[in-house]
Amino acid sequence: MFCPQCKQTLRVVEEEAFSALLCETCGGVFYPEGEFRKHLELVKTRPQEQVPLNELIGRKALSPLIAGTLPMPCPACETPMKPFNYGYDSNVMLGKCPKCGGLWVEKGQIDQVVRYIKGHPVLDRLADGLMDEQREKQAFERTVERVSPKRSFLAIPLFTFVPVSDADELQVRPVMTWGLVTLNVLLFLFARRYFLDMAMVPSEILRGERLHTLVTSQFAHVGLWHLLGNMLFLHAFGTRVEDRIGRWRFLGTYLMLGVVAGLAHVFVGAHPDEPCLGASGAIGGIMGAYLLLFPTSSVRVVLLYTTVPIPAIIYLGAWFVMQTLIPFTSNVAVAAHIGGFLAGMVAGVVMRYLGVGEPARARPEGGAD
Image (tube, rainbow, N blue to C red; front, side, top):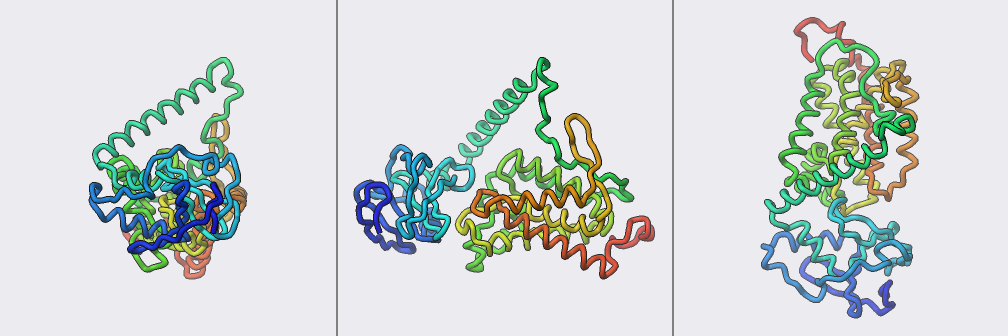
């Protein structure tokens, strides 16, 4: 195999628990699928001062190949590699082959990933908080600037076509849905330092490791907009489903559909070594169940400066079609969305067949929910 940058022959490097191919000229490293994760697992178990700074580690500016301005062939199969952000928010851009799953890592980037994983917890939390606050402030200022009074008639609100509620009245208070929303928000505000531990990594699931992350990953979100979007969809569709099937059935269904959605992401295998976070798969499942339980219902969505009812079958059908248009190789866990939605539809069919999910008004006062 040859280095995609300097065309020199790559040397095989066999370490304790992983293997890789090193370019001795530019210092780049190619990891076959799964090997980079093994290297990181080995490194992150050691104290920071014991992490060896060998010839694979150093600092170097991001090359135009990794930056995406030039095509970069995979050393193994010659398929053009695509840049991706390790961990979604590390800003360490690696090259990944969409065909064989191999990773190209520039000289210096291993050090950056290690620092990202093993940074000082207090300083990391402080820096993350300051950066998030600054980004949100800048985004808000740009939005305000665009939507000035002089041209407000041209502005389209950010959340146009986002669902806000079911069009029908509820019979009981959706305590469990509110509880899930509250729990997700509290974890985002006070427990973000644990999110990498809560994240689900497909390659680990396939090895039978950290299976609990199929559940814990449902309660961690990458950023504020990720959280806000998911919680709006959960509130819009979850309240009505909970109203129909009861609180505890709803909670069990929600968690079960989240696990199925996570397994769909695992078995598609688009990003085997990347951590996956978010409640999107579970919420997609609730949306699928909603469609089968309330096929003739309508959903109130934001349209410009008001809300309008849209038939659920049209809204959810359009949402599903949009998911199928997103490539599986993107940074969005599309397989989890689609798998969760289809599993939710199956759950809806089963509940209707078994007679589960009678309207709340038909349940006796004080009955089981």
